[in-house]
Length: 226
Image (tube, rainbow, N blue to C red):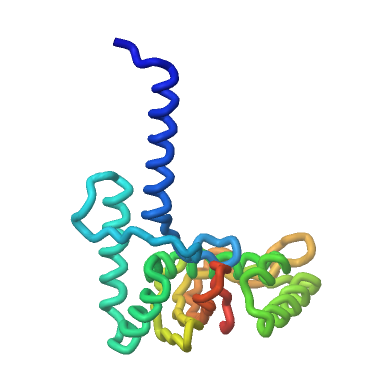
């Protein structure tokens, strides 16, 4: 027996309403995002469904469970005071995942080095706090206009270790120690290498601090110290 057209429309409307209700209940989850980079924590006020390892059958649920398991391992490797501060951050922002944050911080590190090397002021302003942004911009301009330019290429980031976590009211700060492999050469205005070795990979260590007001709807973490 065929279903009348009017009944089909009603069924479709009911199904759509149920989907919208489910979406409002479960919410959406996110990661870290400095500026437009990949490390973004949404702050839309919706309730986020937290999945635990071993629960759920869909690929998305399994992926989220693995991410949460990885996050637990990262947090447990920290000192007890830092673990307690991360727990306090998660109370304010339940969808915060340390592994997502670190992945985004690595992307930000790459973006800043590339922007500095290419004299990309817009990217630097989007990612850096005002008090260090001007210093980066001026130094990038100076290097860009020099007769001999210092050209740095990031080969890889071998490690990004959390060294400090603080939370004052709802203002969070996380410091990471980056260990990276870089190649630095000097080029003349024709792009020819006049100093350094394009095959010599150097091990470089940096410590950067990322900060964010967790009460803000702006999801961006800002680099405040390098």
